[in-house]
Image 1 (cartoon, rainbow, N blue to C red):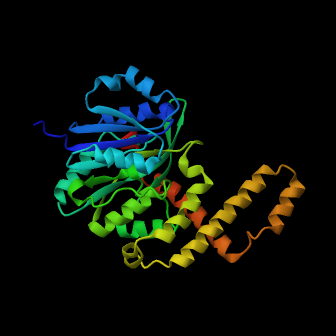
Image 2 (image 1 turned 180 degrees about the vertical axis):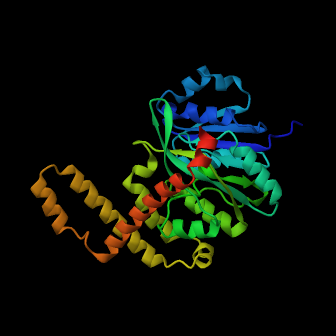
Image 3 (image 1 turned 90 degrees about the horizontal axis):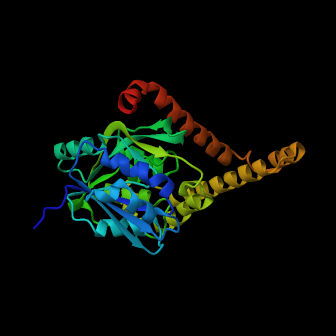
Length: 317
């Protein structure tokens, strides 16, 4: 019987041919080689399958491509989990990039912490410009519980995003919920924290590549939080002392703020913009507090990048 690779990498994709092959190259360039990739094509209507079969990746037996009807990213991740047999499972979105040492750093961490259920790493937000990836903000954290507390209460970005995760299969007791897609990684990671400790490799080993087609750019990704808070496990509520009704109000305020920004930007007339600005409820303390929180999150990301520029340059340049 052939021994399965030590790590299974699950990459869901939907119409991602424009991004996918840089992502696959970042896996192929890993300095840890005992892995297998399952690319789950979620009913794509572009040339993903054709281009993959014509690419060099189809000649590498470690890459497997499966196709299915469109059922969303959570369903695709679950399909990838179901097709794997490895000791560890890693997740990678079709538009993100791994540093060559990402898997080796995380495997080393998990070997040194056998009681941990999983581990994450720091990451950089990025954009591809002229064939190169720029670095915008850096998101870091020292404690996974504090990180999840901020993420669950909309006070921090999604540092537990799936592209940073490596999970020990024996501690994996749940799949990705199909009730929501955009924040499925939040639900998955919060449940992981109930099973065992989540470690952190304190290096920015992932580029979170931003672009206009991103799922998280959609207003529905914010609305997903309302669905999540209505279905949040009691164990998560208790562990992180969450006030669910207050969080729902925070989400609704966020939706109102995004709606205001959308209307403001669509209006070209200066007088109309002033009217929108003065007649909106933007000046309510609850929404002002939300705006200040967004500014604080963005500022902290840029500050962290500047503070850790030596580490970033050493790793990525």
